[in-house]
Image 1 (cartoon, protein in one colour):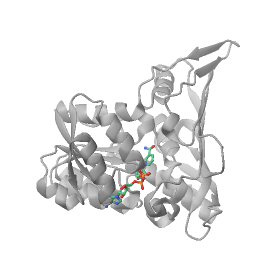
Image 2 (cartoon, helix red, strand yellow):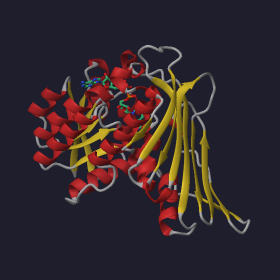
Image 3 (cartoon, helix red, strand yellow):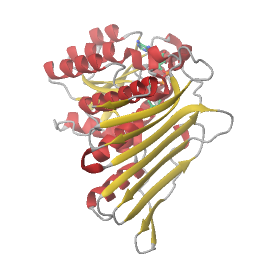
Image 4 (tube, rainbow, N blue to C red):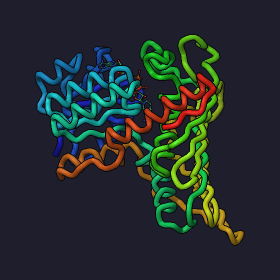
Length: 338
Ligand SMILES: NC(=O)c1ccc[n+]([C@@H]2O[C@H](COP(=O)([O-])OP(=O)(O)OC[C@H]3O[C@@H](n4cnc5c(N)ncnc54)[C@H](O)[C@@H]3O)[C@@H](O)[C@H]2O)c1
């Protein structure tokens, strides 16, 4: 049994709390949130201790690990403090907003010999895992090009609208688009050439950063990728995720459209394989919650003392590097070589 302290119980923190409650070898013993009413309410509902900030937590807790779900600008400080206190760390994506901060986080994790993971949840998402498995099996031959999409209405739940400021969230290019940039890296490795174009937040063009961005990238062995992501959609526009991979012997495609954001992620949408011979296969991914899978993996690695190999801090840094390259390219209208 591993004891967990959850830091930040806003939108994603509540999803993590619910996932953790279903993991047999995890016990949520502490909750931290600087909104006292919110933090205490969550702590009381699960019989955990409440702490107002991470310093208070680290002085008083016997938790084995922390699950960091605070806004992105607070990831580095929170993760480094927890690592220096010897706690294993799962930090929500994006790992940080600068490569210097990401490097400091990696350094602190190494120096303290703790297990460190970034919440790149697509690596634990049933359909994405199934498609990755299919590509790795070689069934469709060599993959040539991947297309990914992540479209959403403007999020409206964040405390003090921290996500609407590029300084605090990185804008949609870092906050949202990074999911698909991580996915492209997972499929094809580190990009070599990045070219992007973006649309500044129409509601906050001076400070919001890109609210919509489309990035093309070239990878080793001539593979290419395109990702489009944005949160400038309005009204009833459904949350949309798509992945289409063109391969030597056919194409695999998955399109999910439902809900406002990821709340309706449990709704199944089948994966289609369009084979070279004209036949079409439909495959289903076993429905397990992606956040449950992610947290189960983290807790198991701690309990069995296994290295974190999926969604490491280094993976978090790589996707941030990719997102920063896309922003640079879009802002300067340039091609960025990595
Ligand atoms: N994996 C995903 O699909 C996914 C989805 C949404 C958000 N996220 C990420 O999760 C993080 C949080 O996003 P959110 O939408 O839940 O934000 P949010 O504003 O809904 O919640 C953040 C919570 O942290 C608290 N908080 C802020 N600073 C704190 C601090 N220093 N110490 C303690 N508590 C603090 C706030 O009071 C709030 O309750 C972001 O990095 C975001 O990018 C990931």
